[in-house]
Image (cartoon, rainbow, N blue to C red; front, top):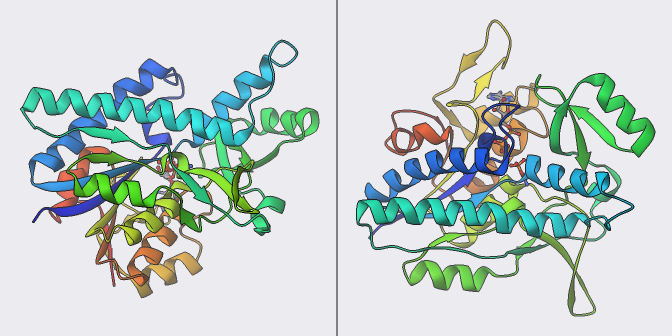
Length: 312
Ligand SMILES: Nc1ncnc2c1ncn2[C@@H]1O[C@H](COP(=O)(O)OP(=O)(O)O)[C@@H](O)[C@H]1O
Ligand SMILES: NC(=O)OP(=O)(O)O
């Protein structure tokens, strides 16, 4: 039987260069990423794909802010839904093109996915999820003053706006996801961490937040009993002392080693921290292995020749 991998594609990994943020630029990068994912499928893996939307959701609400006065603002949960559609389209089309070219008789399908969050989650009072463009300190401070944004410095790459990021508790469309996997579809789901919803008197209602796609992917990998959770991002391997002269890349970590490095501050919140936490949660929930790598190294990482691997 095919082994099942959840592959989570980072939102930032779709942006190769600060200037290449247009949708066709991102599509070109997605085509490369999907070539790598098709290689994984050709190697005999079944895959379920999730993706981030941090930069993209920020661009979208910023566009709406700039058009304000002429057009209404876009509520954050709708921006998540919009980016799920647009990024899902990019993945679905890019994969289908690869499958056609290679004679792979599989179909990729995107599911608009909602995730349930707790309306009392303290994340609503403490925004931590970076979205949108990287700014200079001066630009960031101007937005704090003029627009009331909360901003943070993000992994030495610049300053970014942050929004609430509550914990994903349940995936609303999980049955459809499982059924489609069973029927042989390559499923794309929980995009951008899923559209955050709360349950109110039996109804689902959207809330203004961006769920961390690494946490949502971890929950998904547990629910569908995936054999491996792979987080594909902008680096081939996780490092300690990241960005410093004594940076050291890591090949393999146990849960205890990863926790010790996390406690020592090697994996910052908002970027590498959630990825490590997501893998640890998956492993503690019965997962066998978690991998962090770049899109180009996906096959090599699954074959144990690249990436950073965390094991129980
Ligand atoms: N210890 C670390 N090892 C490797 N990369 C790190 C580390 N700490 C921070 N980073 C940064 O975190 C980035 C991944 O986070 P981010 O770009 O937010 O993810 P995503 O690809 O999901 O959008 C890496 O590309 C790297 O710039
Ligand atoms: N929603 C989310 O986690 O997006 P990124 O992976 O792009 O930060």
